Image 1 (cartoon, rainbow, N blue to C red):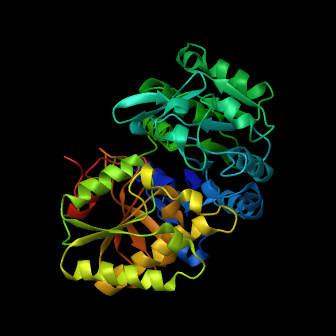
Image 2: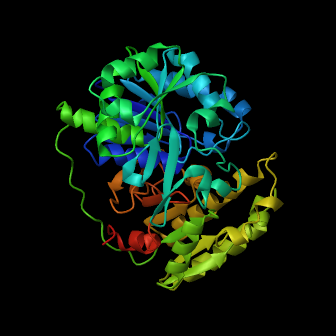
Length: 445
């Protein structure tokens, strides 16, 4: 294996495929693993220039992080990549109790050393921006400060009530966070300004990205400031989008590859654990365009003994597929039908919903011989895909009009799973016709 350009851990599965799409679509071939791979599995992908590991830390406690993340970061460091990235959601939703990003950075610094950790969140490609340290995100054609965002300010588990990223992080860690703002990045002495912020005792350094110019500038600073032995960094896929600009400028990349649309299949299965209004619109669109919907009770799925409920849903789903139609299993139809208050946080019930949606999907794929499927919901995807016996994912088709939710190829020892195409979609991601677009195997028009 040659020295990788980048290694990363994604704090949920859809975020992990988002990074894979950002890299692979720009000529950095990437393999995404579902768990730390054995040497022989890693060797299968030795030609790749980036390696990822999909995780679940976005929905986990600090105690879980302290138990599980050290070995993850040790593995990332063992790959010898120039930059090792702890990937978080571009909306930065997190709290001291759930998905604590500050705690993850603290653990990463124990493995990679005490050098300042670059933090990049802005990604114009997915309409996320930071300006003077404040985070903004788009929703239905309008951009909002994150604490006024119609969805993220009301997230059922980690609502974003603070737009200043430094203030938000101060609730999660005592590490000091500095800022290289868009004015400094655009100045003639951007290098000196960046060096000053990195040198003045900051443990974390947020770099603003508010457009293509600042993104290019941040890419230059990230590559210039990397440290020997692997630079630990944190952020959204905006970090990769910034880096590929710099790698392209330096001639480190070949031409971006061409991807051929796979074309339509007669039927697919979709499972959704998302309560997002974006996913609600996608479900409603699908039901008007040939999909058959089956509502699934999340409380029943979360129960310790859900075997009978699972068999009932599988039978109903197979009946739809046998008619030659696509099936869509969903636990909620938008925020108004969210039953999260009836499901506990402490006993793993929320995780069981994702896991059992994965079991449902696996049964449908195996028994109906499906070759394409979709999982909707960031946390759902992380727990569901682990039930499908998938070892790794590679990019099958990027979706430029709907970035962050590509069609992937699954790799695994199980022949019923190996080679299937699967799309993984975060709650806020995708156009209204997303499910139809995946069924039809085409980018959006």
